[in-house]
Amino acid sequence: MLKSIFAGLLAFAASQVAAQEEPAAPYYDIQSPPFYLTLKSSNASLDGMYLTPCHEGAAIESLCLSGPITTNYTYAHFFYNTSSSEESPTSGLLTWILPAVDLNVPSSLRFDNNNASNVVMPLFYPGDKDAALVYFTAENELRTNWNQDNTLALPIDSQQHWFICTTRFGYLYQTLNWVLGTESPQNPTCQSVTVYRKWA
Image (cartoon, rainbow, N blue to C red; front, side, top):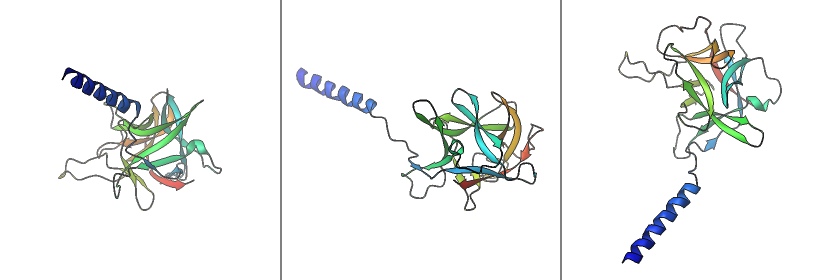
């Protein structure tokens, strides 16, 4: 009796070790072809510009304003990851590959809250923990349902709230930001833009 219980416990422990050694497959397992992120704006100095990752800290990147890209600039390639578990995915992750010395690190976009402001900076962090859900319209416009207007009957606000602002997270840059609610950005440098996907 004791031998069978002991054998059962050993088998259970072995299965747990095996499960820990084999990491689960990522949920957002379907990756799109690479694309660039471009801007449209009523401000001529922003219209047609691109977004590229820029260093904010250890393995942390924001989306910085950049000039037009005319060559196959792989550092500015982004991807849209969706899940094979969903028949018709309505949202997914905006991802980017952080190039490192010995390996490439998949990173996902998430919003970094600032409790003192309604201007929120999207940042790329390694992995997909706390990643923001985004989607692209039929016109390739980048949107997120993250902003919900609770002054109404709990609708999903899918309007665009993207702005280019001068920010300082790790460094002083002109970066892409999301503005919460319906008020004007508290950062006076912010200018409204629309973000589009352009296939590489």
